[in-house]
Length: 408
Image (cartoon, rainbow, N blue to C red):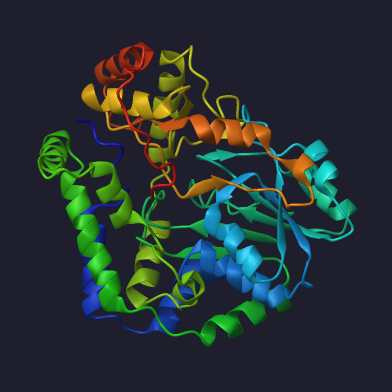
């Protein structure tokens, strides 16, 4: 079976991370190095995850209870949980799914006197233009928070200059993964200083727990070749287990209850060191290869709706498609040897406030109800891509059971 993807990390990176777990060194110095590597302007904060950085930002801003944040209708469910934890109200803004952008007209419809900020998420590796959104934010005195967790392409883009805060992720399944970690850049120095003070009061992430994650990803890297992966999926079937659920559980960033306690930690020294290594040694050619494969796949699947197919900028971090019966098609592709999945990240659709049902994000809901992620990434051969296109074109067999959408 062709795996759904490969961890974007090399063996030398894993060895370097394991070594730093055994000999961690100066954590404060490691923090400074990764922040300086990201931005020489002293406007960056390295943290445990994007969730951690967003929580720190909301703590430092201390917005009045009941304030509303306009949120891209598709985002990580934990982001809305964090908003709600702070006594704030997430308000969905529906998307143009062809371009994965937030139309200003939708922002205008959602705006109220209680609105204090906009949180826009670049999805699936695309990057929406923000000029009009930034102009709207300035016009209405709103903070603009840019979630770039899925849009990292190297230091060529570190967020829109007009954004008040920009969040980047180096989590387990992200580009240039450090198996965790995030960086937030903040325009307001007073807010950034407060975020640093709050984070300094947190306990430090266990480096032994991080070492366990390094080992886990070593196993996944071994499995990320067709023959070992085929053996793994066959063993799962023999044991009556679904490989999808096993992979999802192992890669979930913050599983189970107690989200806030889990994200309120300082990143361990080995994580900071690996983040610096991944940032400074990043090869932009891999993005060019990914774009090439993504464009080839779009061309090979002309009859299929592909969210973001008309995005102005796209690095194809993942390759989502829409299917009327996505669970059945997923299992059919498994039978053809392609490990498609219903979830490439813990994304979900933001529900409107109970008193504003007119803001139901219909376009986003329709896509996420039908989304299926195909194994399209550098390394797939033209022959396999053509075979995948033929398998997708076949009518799905009506014998599959539903599976969860929110996986990793």
